[in-house]
View (cartoon, rainbow, N blue to C red):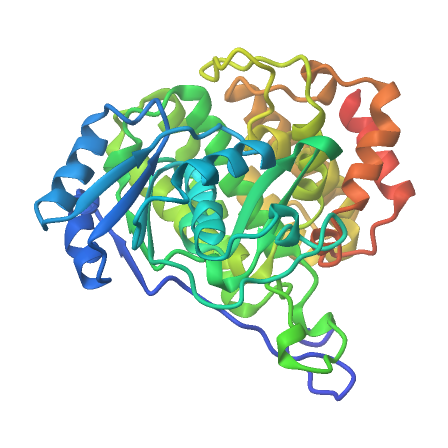
Amino acid sequence: MGDPYIVYSDSVDAVFTISLPQTIKFGMGVHREVGYEATRLGIRRALLVVGKRLVDSRIARNVISSLESEGMEVEVFSDVRIEPEDEGLVEGYKRIRDLRIDGFIALGGGSTIDTAKILDLLYCYPAPLEDYINRSICKGLGPPGPLKPLIAIPTTAGTGSESTSVAVLDVKRLRVKTGISNPMIRPSIALIDPLTTLTLPPMVTASSGLDVLNHAIESYTARPYTAKQALKSPSERPVYSGATPVGDLFGEKAIEWVVKYLRRAYADPLDIEARYYMMLAASIAGIGFGHVGVHVPHAMAYPIAGMVRNYYPEDYDFGYPIAPHGIATAIPAAYAFKHLSPYNYEKFARVAEILTGEYVGRDPKAIGEAIFESYIELLEDLGVPTNLRELGFGKEDLEALVDGTLKQQRLLSIAPKNIGKKDLEKIFIEAIG
């Protein structure tokens, strides 16, 4: 079998693009440098986007103090949902549209950073939100130019949103989760500080850590970027390219760190070593999937999160049912990887070795079973449901779940096999249990 990356032909697009924040800074206490970085970006009037649970925290006070010490005016926006949805984002934009803002600061998890990205987009280029939401769901238009500077300070080791050009949101009328993908919404600077994660509740640690694992496995096992057809213009090249040698390096290492450190971070919030490497895993997995993409488990997670109606996970007490993003991806992942393992068995064999700590052979079925058993064991150790029935889903939801997943062609297109309705029905039936 030849190297899938060494391809040159007029019939394929043999190019991948890595677009990163202007600056990524990683280290203990780096969130206190936000004022310095904001000054470098020319920000004088900042909007701090921060969730209600963090708005009165020491970290938030540190951030505001750092900004004000540089002579900046700081407005605070704290109406952030744990899973952003279109109607709330539009209402949030209406509250800030008349403010004088020349830069955004996002302090929080992926939902907060994604909220800041979308507020920045609407503030700079007011338009109906559906104009920007991905094609196959809405129009998928890009902004006509650059946005205001955005500094992202993640407080969860999970989404990688601080280094991606994607923002995820629910479209309420369609009961589906989707996103906005464009290089213009990528943060200008990411300040990644492991100390910001020390107060994370156990289930938030588990959910965000599982998201890292899925980012890493899905990007690592995606079809190669050379599988894309030739383009008429470089402007048509999608944000998600498919697997690349760089993505492989980041994905494999992130999987190793999650397997080694997630259980430790879940069991002991003050395990500094575990927090450090989980944050680093989230960051490099974000750089990896930020250009490679994710595939089947994330595509399945979008309708799961949009349709959930009977799940109230510990540490997510918001008064309404919710399937946190990491959990919504993790449950279908166990079943999807088992189904997909024959179609990229060399990569999945390496995943199985990392998950189990031993060589599992070359038989695709054995590889799939080993990944499935190890993944389910991890979910059990973290107190996460192992099937969709525990989230309130039943066989009567199958058609809607499949239809919602099929709308995510941006993700399914880079899966290691062509995914159709029959594939998804099989995976969802097993995942429902």
